[in-house]
Amino acid sequence: MAERDISDLIARYEQMLVSGKSVYFDADEYDELAEYYDKLDDLDSARDIVAQGLRIHPENERLMLKSARFMIYDGKYTEALYFLNAHFGTYDFEMYLMKIECLLNMGLYAEAYQLTSEVLNDDETELDIILSELGFLYLEAEYYDEAILYLEKSLEYDSSNREVLDDLAYGYEAKGDFESAIRICNKILDLDPYSLEGWLMLGKLHSLNGGYENAIDAFDFALTLDERDLTALKLKAHCLVLSGRTEDAVEVLKQCLELYPEDDSIYLSLADSYMELELYDDMLVYIEAYEKYAGENTESVAKKAYAYLLKGDLEQARMFIDQILSTNPESFEANMIAGELNYRLDNMSEAETFYLKALSIHQSDTEDVLEKLVSVNVKQGNLVKAIDWQKRILGIDSSALALRRLALLYLEKGDKENYRMTLDSFSDEELESFYVLFYQDEDVEQIPEDRRSYLLNRLYEAFDCRLLYKNMKY
Image 1 (spheres, rainbow, N blue to C red):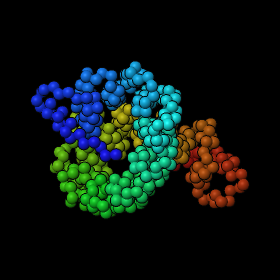
Image 2 (image 1 turned 180 degrees about the horizontal axis):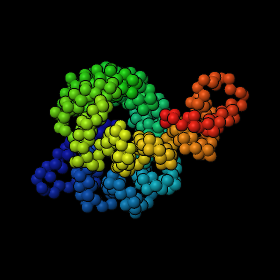
Image 3 (image 1 turned 90 degrees about the vertical axis):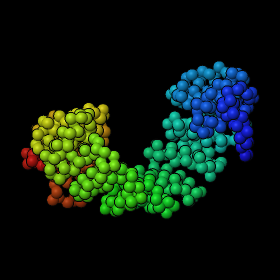
Image 4 (image 1 turned 120 degrees about the horizontal axis):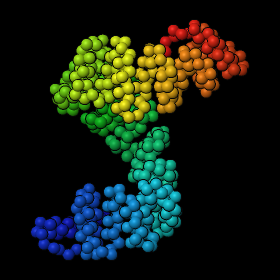
């Protein structure tokens, strides 16, 4: 159904504002005006209109619902729920959706589910609309499993509903199910193959899923629709770097620079790309070009310091680090680079101080910092502290590599009990990989039938002979 033309109504209202004279509007007109300004994202005008309308029509349900909606916009879920309960006693589809939204955001899942069940039994509203609206509410409240369930069910009634498909793709992405998000995104592109946003979304999803070549293909499709689209160009360059094609990424970024020379972020992206290529002089050229546009700041000076550090010019690196820390001692990047600088100078105590400062700034266990702290303490011979830091890494990243490093630290410390306990937690594949570290000349294919028992016993032997491996690099 086409929307009613309310241009005359809007003109009357705006004329009233200009003249300052009161004009009468009925409740439906206030409702339409509020809806119009709400869609324009002019919430202040929409709120004023609803407030005016309720002064004249205090019992109008449409205006009361809009008033509750504004409370929800403001995150006043308890107030909105109380208002709805106080003014509405019978079932209303829109009102129940608002109640469910409040309850979900208040963490009252059971109460929200009870109302959801009532909404699902609404015979007067089409089921696909009910399901799509519920899916959106649960999605917004970050109940992704429920949202996906309702949205998928809604598609059974209308498989081409673009809003539902968009919400569903987002739900799968938020849940980390990138394969399913890609599947839905492909459905969107089947419906609209010339959607620039669709191809960009597909590229991002492939990138998140580690499919960088597929992502690059998607961004190329986007660029056939708009060869100047900066987002597509930047994302393509990013994926080229991640796929190991940094030289190609540089060419794409230079293309970006030709099209948008005023975009200073491109200069930093080029600097980062040249760092990947270990072309530090070129890296410095683009940092300086960035500073001509954006001025010198903590980020650019930190990158310069790091470039000189990687070049081996430690004095220049120190100069720039001191420059940052003198004005911004809370810079995470500067403290990390200062730690690395002192590590290279074999000033382990100083390095540890800077890494600890970086960790305190980040307010959370950052794996990169923790790995540096492990390294520093190993160099200092403080294996107890190194093990403690490695355990914190394991709490963040339970990968085979993190577990292997912990086992090596126990080996180096001579802690037989914890070494064995750590080995016991290895999978068969991880155990075999660890075994090869010590017995590189042995053919693992010739290991007896009871492989796990054999591998464990041989690795226990390696512990007993640990002095042979004391100088092994950690």
